[in-house]
Structures are given as structure tokens and as C-alpha cells.
Amino acid sequence: MKYIDEFRDGEVAKTLALKIAKLAQPGRNYSFMEFCGGHTHAISRYGLSDLLPSNVRMVHGPGCPVCVLPIGRIDMAIDLALKHNVIVCSYGDTLRVPASESLSLLKAKARGGDIRMVYSTLDALQIARDNPGREVVFFAIGFETTTPPTALAILQAAQENLSNFSVLCCHVLTPAAITQILESPEVRQWGTVPIDGFIGPAHVSTVIGSRPYEFFAEEYRKPVVIAGFEPLDVMQAILMLIAQVNDGRAEVENEFSRAVSRDGNRKAQDRVAEVFELRHEFEWRGLSVVPYSALKIREKYGTFDAERRFKMDYQSVPDNKACECGAILRGVKRPQDCKIFGTVCTPENPIGSCMVSSEGACAAYYSYGRYKDMAPPVSNSLVASRLTGAEGK
Amino acid sequence: MCLALPVKVIEVGCGPDGEHAMVDLGGVKKEISLALLDDVQVGDYVILHVGYALSKLDPEEAERTLALFSEMSEATEATL
Image (cartoon, rainbow over all chains, first blue to last red):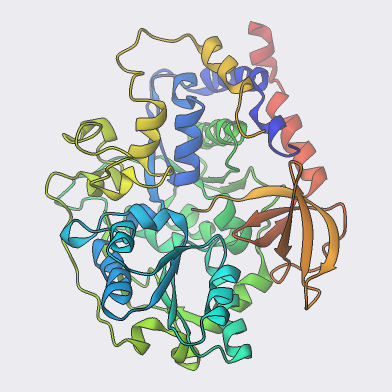
């Protein structure tokens, strides 16, 4: 498909790998965090780490909405389905996330909860129209990419006076999470990891633009390169980050200029601002409680807020003790460092959230990398040729 | 979660409010919402996420990025 195939070309990947090898100075170590799960997935799926010199390391960040969603939030959705007899609609990613009492939304469905997977908020609205006698709640998760469609759904429900529709809002904000990583890198529980620069989000940035990252470059002196989710985009971004580090620059550069502008999508931003306001604080898995890092529904649209309608309070629930998701989400540990990785915790039976979504660091490593460290080393050209056989055409 | 795909717009002004478009997704046709994007024309490529077009793809910028990938510095060329 256009705008996909040409960004997966194996021959071009070889050129980029060569350029990276030339530019990376042997005497120093480079450690870059790809914030987004989309990039984590691309790095694992196309074996990009194998194309990098050994002194260039990619640290997986917390930009996977399913992974950072704390257990207590899933419990709220399950309660709505099982105790309030509500139809709970959600994107497929959330259904298998482990919750309290060995439940998940999928297991709650097996117990009789009316839980429906939707592709779009448009589908959730239709379910509400088709079931006027039932309460319908859309369990909304995601970063800035996914927030505008939720805002539109609430505006549409208000316009239609769709009084049986409401939203359990768990939308979170990218810049707040990056600030948290930069400001409190020494979280005692997990330790720290050095980061020389960030690969900035692709699709989040189509909405918020490149401007919000300028603060990180200026204030924290960390380079940021916004990149698309295709493998060549990621390779080019790594090259640009190495160049910035070598030159002692800390700037925001935009590799994904075919879709991202400095200002982003103003129309989408306006809709979000109309419906949502900042939450004082929100608990993230791996980052703990982060101030002003999430959105809640404004008073004006309060009747569409499931938390208000069903008088729900958030209860924090600790993760499974054996689970290392918290440290993995901060980049302090790698999936293979977790004792239950690939044995007790697998994509079929996830114990931690990082094993649920295909963008989660554990699921990505399980699917594409877990045999790599046992096998004899693969040559760079072999890895590059793998890129030409890319799926999804 | 932020999964989104570039799709080609083949018809605009669809749906009850005229805010929908028909897109071609590698041969599959699908109706999507244009409520978050202005000035979309037939033939444009847009980034599709959970049923909504989020941004337009700029063909010239895409060409520029592709050219950048293959661009060789003198130092690199010398080793080939």
C-alpha cells in the first residue's frame, strides 16, 4: 500500500544501518527512549535492534495506553457490567487486561456481563441508540490520538440527547508522562536509566503537533525526533538523534513531516478542549500517581460522565507481586529480566499489562525476539532482507 | 492503540450529515468520519484511526523523507 511499502524497503534499511554505524562514535554509548508502543512494536517486529551498533541502545517507554492503565480502572469497568447491569463498550485491547480477583473484561463477559468490543466510538453511540432501555458506557482509554473521537462522541450524544450514553474516561497525556520520566528518574523502587534523547510519537503528534516537545528540548536539554511508525522512519530518527548528540544539540526535529505539523490538528484540539479538562492526578502503571497527566469530562458535559452518573470512586490496587511491568514501563528492566516472562505470563495468559497489547514491550519481545538471544548471531544483511518480506501489504 | 493507517479517499460527502467519506484500504472499502479534518478531497491520503481521519498526508514531504533515507554522505559513500 502507498505510504507503507516504500517505508519498509530492506535495501534502504541497509543504507540507513550503514549511516548509523558510521555516525555512532565508538567511544560513547547512546541510549534513546522510544516513547510509543507503536515504535516498540516496529523495533521488535523488524528486528531493528540487530541493525544497530552495540553502543546504541533503545529503551522502551510507557506509551502503550493498555500497559499504563492501572488495575483499579479496569475494576471500575467490570463493576459497571456486573453490578450495574450496564452495557460496557470498549476497544479490543482492553478486554484481556488482568484486573482484581483474576478477572478481566473478557472473563466478566463469560460471567454474564454485557461487554462489547467496538472499533469506533461511532459504534458505541449506535449501541446506545439501539438499546434505549439500557445504560451504555464507553470505556475510553488512550493517548491524544484516541481522545478526539471520544470528545466527538460526547458532543454527538449531547446533540441527540442520548441520555443512556456515558463515558468512563481514562484518557492520558503524553507530555506529562515524558516530564515524569525526566523529572523523577530516580524512583526509589525501580532505579534509573540514562536517556540521551527521545523518539517522539507518530500519531499522537498528528493531533498535538511538534510544539509541545519543544519544552523538553529547551528545559531538559534532551533531543526529540518525531518519527513515523514504519521501520525506516525509526531508523532515520535514530540517525538524527545520534547526529544531535554528537553535535551537542537538543532540538525538536520532525521526521514524520508527511503527517505532522508544528501546530497539529487544531480542529481536533478544539473539540477535546470543549469536552475535557485536566485531572489533578491520575495513577499510571509504572509511573505511579502523576499530576495533571490525564483528562476528565467537564462539568458542562457531566451527565455523560460515567464516574458521576454511577457515583464511582477510583481505588488503587497493587500489581501482581511477581510482575515487573512497572520497571519495564520505565525502561529500567527488559522483558526477559522478569521471572515470569514467557513461562507463567504469555500473551494467551497475561499476568501483567505489558503482555496484553501487541505494543506492550513484553508482548512485542515475546512475539518477535524471545528466541533471538539463544540463536547464533544473525548477520545484518539477513536481518535487512527480512524487512523486504514485510507483512501487512 | 494509536494504530492508524494511510488510506485513500475515493468519495466525500457520504453519510446522513455529509461528514463521512469512503476510503480504499488496500482494496477494502470503508466509510469513515471526516469530522476532525477540513478540506479533504477525493484522491487525498489521510491517516485513519478508530473510524476518523486524523491528518492529511503531504505527498511532497513524503518524497522528501524518502530521498533523505537514501542520501549518502561523502564519508559513507567512500566506504562502499
